Image 1 (cartoon, rainbow, N blue to C red):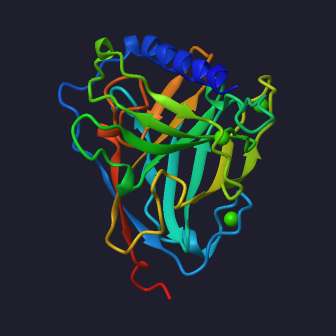
Image 2 (image 1 turned 60 degrees about the vertical axis):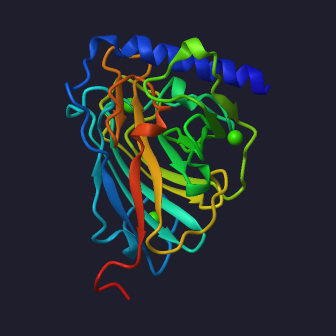
Image 3 (image 1 turned 90 degrees about the vertical axis):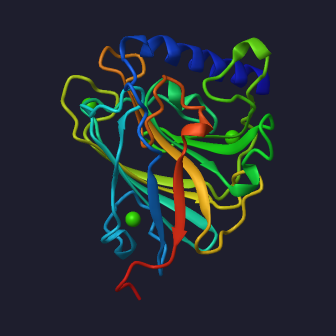
Length: 268
Ligand SMILES: [Ca+2]
Ligand SMILES: [Ca+2]
Ligand SMILES: [Ca+2]
Protein backbone atom coordinates (compact mmCIF):
# COMPACT_ATOMS: atom_id res chain seq x y z
CA UNK A 1 0.00 0.00 0.00
CA UNK A 2 2.76 2.38 0.97
CA UNK A 3 4.65 1.75 -2.18
CA UNK A 4 1.60 2.14 -4.33
CA UNK A 5 0.89 5.54 -2.85
CA UNK A 6 4.54 6.50 -2.96
CA UNK A 7 4.58 5.65 -6.64
CA UNK A 8 1.56 7.86 -7.13
CA UNK A 9 3.28 10.68 -5.26
CA UNK A 10 6.48 10.39 -7.25
CA UNK A 11 4.51 10.24 -10.47
CA UNK A 12 2.74 13.34 -9.31
CA UNK A 13 6.03 15.11 -8.70
CA UNK A 14 7.33 14.17 -12.12
CA UNK A 15 4.10 15.38 -13.67
CA UNK A 16 4.32 18.67 -11.82
CA UNK A 17 7.79 19.20 -13.23
CA UNK A 18 6.53 18.59 -16.73
CA UNK A 19 3.48 20.76 -16.24
CA UNK A 20 5.65 23.62 -15.06
CA UNK A 21 7.89 23.80 -18.10
CA UNK A 22 5.91 26.60 -19.70
CA UNK A 23 6.18 28.84 -16.64
CA UNK A 24 9.54 30.51 -16.05
CA UNK A 25 11.03 31.13 -12.61
CA UNK A 26 11.96 34.68 -11.65
CA UNK A 27 15.60 35.66 -12.36
CA UNK A 28 16.20 35.78 -8.61
CA UNK A 29 14.01 33.95 -6.13
CA UNK A 30 12.41 36.26 -3.56
CA UNK A 31 13.56 36.24 0.06
CA UNK A 32 11.84 33.60 2.15
CA UNK A 33 8.59 35.03 3.52
CA UNK A 34 7.95 35.28 7.24
CA UNK A 35 4.61 35.13 9.05
CA UNK A 36 3.72 35.92 12.64
CA UNK A 37 1.51 33.05 13.80
CA UNK A 38 -0.58 34.52 16.63
CA UNK A 39 -1.75 32.58 19.63
CA UNK A 40 -5.50 32.96 20.13
CA UNK A 41 -7.62 32.85 23.26
CA UNK A 42 -10.14 30.39 21.83
CA UNK A 43 -9.80 27.98 18.92
CA UNK A 44 -12.16 28.26 15.96
CA UNK A 45 -15.29 26.18 15.72
CA UNK A 46 -14.38 23.82 12.88
CA UNK A 47 -17.31 24.40 10.57
CA UNK A 48 -15.60 25.96 7.57
CA UNK A 49 -16.98 29.41 8.40
CA UNK A 50 -14.33 32.00 9.17
CA UNK A 51 -16.59 34.09 11.38
CA UNK A 52 -15.00 33.03 14.69
CA UNK A 53 -13.52 35.81 16.86
CA UNK A 54 -10.09 34.17 16.60
CA UNK A 55 -9.84 35.00 12.88
CA UNK A 56 -10.56 38.71 13.36
CA UNK A 57 -7.63 40.92 12.44
CA UNK A 58 -5.37 37.99 11.50
CA UNK A 59 -3.30 38.94 8.42
CA UNK A 60 -4.03 36.91 5.29
CA UNK A 61 -1.38 35.28 3.15
CA UNK A 62 -2.18 35.45 -0.56
CA UNK A 63 -0.75 32.58 -2.54
CA UNK A 64 1.22 33.24 -5.73
CA UNK A 65 2.20 31.06 -8.61
CA UNK A 66 4.59 28.42 -7.31
CA UNK A 67 7.16 28.68 -10.09
CA UNK A 68 7.11 32.31 -11.24
CA UNK A 69 5.68 34.16 -8.26
CA UNK A 70 3.13 35.86 -10.51
CA UNK A 71 -0.41 36.57 -9.40
CA UNK A 72 -3.01 33.84 -9.73
CA UNK A 73 -6.29 33.77 -11.63
CA UNK A 74 -7.96 31.69 -8.88
CA UNK A 75 -7.36 33.74 -5.74
CA UNK A 76 -6.40 31.91 -2.55
CA UNK A 77 -5.91 33.47 0.89
CA UNK A 78 -5.08 31.73 4.14
CA UNK A 79 -4.75 32.80 7.77
CA UNK A 80 -2.68 30.87 10.32
CA UNK A 81 -3.09 30.88 14.12
CA UNK A 82 -2.32 28.58 17.04
CA UNK A 83 -4.03 27.57 20.25
CA UNK A 84 -2.91 24.96 22.77
CA UNK A 85 -1.42 22.00 20.97
CA UNK A 86 -2.77 22.89 17.54
CA UNK A 87 -2.10 24.99 14.48
CA UNK A 88 -5.17 26.24 12.64
CA UNK A 89 -5.51 27.52 9.09
CA UNK A 90 -8.44 29.35 7.58
CA UNK A 91 -8.70 29.26 3.80
CA UNK A 92 -10.71 31.28 1.28
CA UNK A 93 -10.49 29.67 -2.12
CA UNK A 94 -12.03 31.23 -5.22
CA UNK A 95 -12.88 28.46 -7.64
CA UNK A 96 -15.03 28.58 -10.75
CA UNK A 97 -15.57 24.82 -10.92
CA UNK A 98 -15.48 22.84 -7.67
CA UNK A 99 -14.51 19.27 -8.50
CA UNK A 100 -13.81 16.60 -5.89
CA UNK A 101 -14.23 12.87 -6.42
CA UNK A 102 -12.10 11.82 -3.43
CA UNK A 103 -13.80 9.90 -0.66
CA UNK A 104 -11.38 8.21 1.72
CA UNK A 105 -8.44 9.24 3.84
CA UNK A 106 -5.19 9.14 1.88
CA UNK A 107 -6.94 9.26 -1.48
CA UNK A 108 -4.71 11.19 -3.90
CA UNK A 109 -6.40 14.54 -3.45
CA UNK A 110 -3.49 16.23 -5.27
CA UNK A 111 -4.61 14.54 -8.47
CA UNK A 112 -7.62 16.87 -8.69
CA UNK A 113 -7.78 19.98 -6.46
CA UNK A 114 -6.56 20.63 -2.94
CA UNK A 115 -4.83 22.91 -0.47
CA UNK A 116 -1.63 21.69 1.15
CA UNK A 117 0.39 22.32 4.32
CA UNK A 118 4.06 21.37 4.59
CA UNK A 119 5.08 21.89 8.22
CA UNK A 120 8.54 21.40 9.70
CA UNK A 121 9.38 21.58 13.41
CA UNK A 122 12.93 22.50 14.49
CA UNK A 123 13.63 18.84 15.34
CA UNK A 124 13.09 18.08 11.65
CA UNK A 125 15.68 20.56 10.41
CA UNK A 126 18.71 18.83 8.92
CA UNK A 127 21.37 18.32 11.58
CA UNK A 128 24.10 18.62 8.99
CA UNK A 129 24.45 19.19 5.28
CA UNK A 130 23.47 15.78 4.01
CA UNK A 131 20.89 14.73 6.60
CA UNK A 132 17.26 14.82 5.48
CA UNK A 133 14.68 17.48 6.07
CA UNK A 134 11.79 15.87 7.93
CA UNK A 135 8.30 17.36 7.81
CA UNK A 136 4.64 16.50 7.62
CA UNK A 137 2.30 17.11 4.72
CA UNK A 138 -1.45 17.66 5.19
CA UNK A 139 -3.53 18.04 2.03
CA UNK A 140 -7.28 18.63 1.92
CA UNK A 141 -9.71 18.31 -0.95
CA UNK A 142 -12.59 20.84 -1.20
CA UNK A 143 -15.00 18.50 0.60
CA UNK A 144 -12.45 17.76 3.32
CA UNK A 145 -10.87 14.46 2.30
CA UNK A 146 -7.46 14.25 4.00
CA UNK A 147 -4.17 13.05 2.59
CA UNK A 148 -1.48 13.23 5.26
CA UNK A 149 2.00 11.83 5.55
CA UNK A 150 5.46 12.10 7.01
CA UNK A 151 8.27 12.96 4.64
CA UNK A 152 12.04 12.40 4.81
CA UNK A 153 13.58 14.52 2.09
CA UNK A 154 17.34 14.14 1.60
CA UNK A 155 17.62 16.49 -1.36
CA UNK A 156 19.45 19.78 -1.40
CA UNK A 157 18.17 22.48 -3.74
CA UNK A 158 18.18 22.15 -6.64
CA UNK A 159 17.82 18.40 -6.20
CA UNK A 160 20.62 16.27 -7.61
CA UNK A 161 18.88 13.09 -8.75
CA UNK A 162 22.20 11.61 -9.92
CA UNK A 163 23.02 10.89 -6.28
CA UNK A 164 20.24 8.30 -6.14
CA UNK A 165 18.71 9.86 -3.03
CA UNK A 166 15.10 8.97 -2.39
CA UNK A 167 12.34 11.06 -0.93
CA UNK A 168 10.68 8.77 1.62
CA UNK A 169 6.99 9.21 2.22
CA UNK A 170 4.92 7.52 4.93
CA UNK A 171 1.24 8.04 4.16
CA UNK A 172 0.24 5.71 7.01
CA UNK A 173 0.58 8.66 9.37
CA UNK A 174 -3.11 9.20 10.15
CA UNK A 175 -3.41 11.17 13.39
CA UNK A 176 -7.03 11.34 14.57
CA UNK A 177 -6.74 15.01 15.47
CA UNK A 178 -6.00 16.27 11.96
CA UNK A 179 -9.41 17.73 11.27
CA UNK A 180 -11.04 20.03 8.78
CA UNK A 181 -14.40 21.37 7.71
CA UNK A 182 -15.40 23.24 4.59
CA UNK A 183 -18.24 25.20 3.08
CA UNK A 184 -18.80 25.08 -0.66
CA UNK A 185 -20.21 28.06 -2.54
CA UNK A 186 -21.44 26.51 -5.75
CA UNK A 187 -22.34 23.09 -7.05
CA UNK A 188 -20.01 20.14 -6.63
CA UNK A 189 -18.89 18.14 -9.67
CA UNK A 190 -21.12 20.12 -12.01
CA UNK A 191 -19.17 22.12 -14.57
CA UNK A 192 -22.29 23.44 -16.26
CA UNK A 193 -22.44 26.45 -13.94
CA UNK A 194 -19.97 28.88 -12.40
CA UNK A 195 -19.02 28.40 -8.74
CA UNK A 196 -17.70 31.00 -6.30
CA UNK A 197 -15.36 28.77 -4.32
CA UNK A 198 -14.97 27.29 -0.86
CA UNK A 199 -13.78 28.12 2.62
CA UNK A 200 -12.09 25.72 5.00
CA UNK A 201 -10.75 25.47 8.54
CA UNK A 202 -8.00 22.96 9.28
CA UNK A 203 -6.60 21.72 12.60
CA UNK A 204 -3.07 20.26 12.59
CA UNK A 205 -1.45 18.91 15.77
CA UNK A 206 1.81 20.67 16.62
CA UNK A 207 3.10 17.22 17.58
CA UNK A 208 2.40 16.21 13.98
CA UNK A 209 5.65 17.01 12.18
CA UNK A 210 8.55 14.67 13.05
CA UNK A 211 9.90 15.76 16.44
CA UNK A 212 7.20 18.39 16.77
CA UNK A 213 5.88 19.60 20.10
CA UNK A 214 3.93 22.62 21.23
CA UNK A 215 6.28 25.56 20.66
CA UNK A 216 7.52 28.21 23.04
CA UNK A 217 6.59 31.75 22.06
CA UNK A 218 9.37 33.03 19.83
CA UNK A 219 10.09 29.68 18.22
CA UNK A 220 10.55 29.63 14.45
CA UNK A 221 9.35 26.69 12.37
CA UNK A 222 9.34 26.26 8.61
CA UNK A 223 6.24 25.93 6.46
CA UNK A 224 4.94 26.26 2.97
CA UNK A 225 1.32 26.41 1.91
CA UNK A 226 0.15 25.37 -1.52
CA UNK A 227 -2.91 24.98 -3.65
CA UNK A 228 -3.50 22.90 -6.74
CA UNK A 229 -6.24 24.26 -8.97
CA UNK A 230 -7.50 22.08 -11.79
CA UNK A 231 -4.78 19.46 -11.91
CA UNK A 232 -6.14 17.94 -15.11
CA UNK A 233 -7.47 21.17 -16.60
CA UNK A 234 -5.95 23.56 -19.14
CA UNK A 235 -6.09 26.42 -16.63
CA UNK A 236 -4.17 24.44 -14.00
CA UNK A 237 -2.47 26.57 -11.36
CA UNK A 238 0.15 25.51 -8.84
CA UNK A 239 0.14 28.08 -6.05
CA UNK A 240 2.46 28.65 -3.10
CA UNK A 241 3.05 30.99 -0.17
CA UNK A 242 6.82 30.88 -0.63
CA UNK A 243 7.67 30.93 -4.34
CA UNK A 244 9.65 27.80 -5.21
CA UNK A 245 10.93 28.58 -8.72
CA UNK A 246 10.28 25.00 -9.86
CA UNK A 247 7.15 22.87 -10.18
CA UNK A 248 7.94 20.81 -7.10
CA UNK A 249 6.42 21.37 -3.67
CA UNK A 250 9.04 19.24 -1.88
CA UNK A 251 11.70 21.93 -1.59
CA UNK A 252 12.16 22.55 2.16
CA UNK A 253 14.94 25.02 1.41
CA UNK A 254 12.16 27.30 0.14
CA UNK A 255 9.77 26.82 3.08
CA UNK A 256 8.86 30.16 4.67
CA UNK A 257 9.52 31.10 8.29
CA UNK A 258 6.64 30.61 10.73
CA UNK A 259 7.13 32.68 13.90
CA UNK A 260 5.06 31.57 16.88
CA UNK A 261 4.06 34.73 18.71
CA UNK A 262 1.63 35.63 21.48
CA UNK A 263 -1.83 37.14 21.12
CA UNK A 264 -2.40 40.14 18.87
CA UNK A 265 -2.38 43.43 20.72
CA UNK A 266 -5.82 44.10 22.08
CA UNK A 267 -6.87 40.46 22.21
CA UNK A 268 -7.83 39.16 25.60
CA1 LIG B 1 -15.46 28.47 12.15
CA1 LIG C 1 -2.04 9.48 6.16
CA1 LIG D 1 -20.20 23.74 -10.23
